[in-house]
Length: 283
Length: 261
Image (cartoon, rainbow over all chains, first blue to last red; front, side):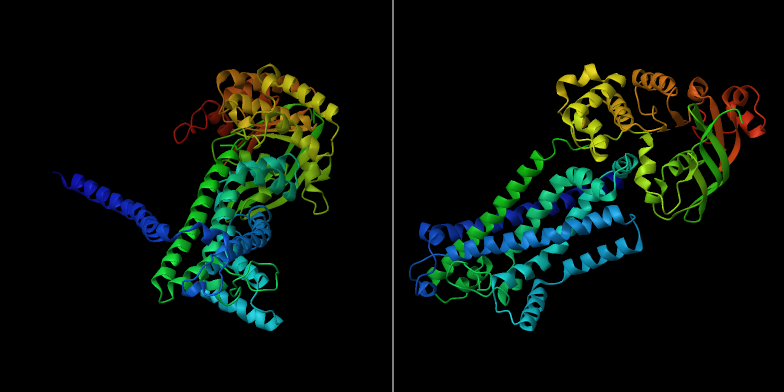
């Protein structure tokens, strides 16, 4: 065989192997979580909060963590959205494409994206100390919002980059202000991507343990106040897996299954929603 | 001057970074005539067109100096409200760019922007302009379906309707027929000939025959310089400049690009 053909085959196989790694990782993770978690997953776990002695194997469930994570995730996502949308509108409609300021903002977002979440946790903790705020739902929401702002903004940014410049130009030519262009046209065109970005950020937010470790604390009760600690799924998993009791560890896997299902569910919804919003999109 | 002037360009220079795209352009665009801007690709045709409604300033590293007067008003004056200037001009771009909304809303967009909310009035104006664009019969049953589902030719006619709905004084066309099928292209050309009774039309084109068919006045640019301009008949039949002569005869351009197609 010719050298070129060998080359072609070699790289093709390499690419297929890489793709296989991706598929297999998801498959194996799901399989592990299912095999280890499913037998331990009882209805009680989903509808009860931990009773006394839950962590040594007595009755109860992780409803506190499920509800806590959802509330915290929703709050943080909402807060992050309030920051991310203006940032991307600013980047795309008020700044020129490659202006120094736009380049700087993108660079900072990328750096923020790369910062480990434990650092966000520590930073959040310092800020809390400064304001005398205890570990609480509010502190958790703020910290997780900071963690997911770069993810959300940069995902939206990439979506907006795909929008043809001519569309923006057309809006201006019709006499729109920048704000009108952003909200009446660009937002619509980018909506499917914006929805996806929001859900990706939400998924990241409810799955992160390190950022909420010091800031949100943990509690066995359901969240009822912004200023009280709140339980989260990642920490519930961590605590249960950390006990020496096999039946509690199994519940840890069951909790991991719940967390994974929530994220999986969100991904599926995001696909579904972005399809629905493509109706009027200009291709 | 034979004509009344609508847009008056004085010593206009445009730089993209280090590249000087327009060099000391001074020219008058006559009122209620079709003015064609011709020249090979990259000669600054579109740049000149976009300098009229200040779309250039959206791009990176653009510097404009010199004056563009529309109705005697310097549009680059910092005190000018740019949306008011742009509203005076409807733009048709090379590739029709519909808005991500339904057909009806595409035409109504500009009207709503400028404060019209009365439903009945909107309906009437939208219908009127769709009829004028020869699109009404094709879309009347699906006014609320997505505009992006229309064919390219229909989209361009929709863009024309949308532009005219806000009652501009000037129509700017940036090679508006180049992406269209012959039928739609002919429709747009016919519309331009009707529209010049009430609008000033500036048309960038690289199709010489189109310029001959439509233009009353021709501006010839080459490498950012204004080589020659004048009434169409004189321009085509008795060009003064050697470069113009060569371009019209398709000599020096065809060798290196498709500009004289």
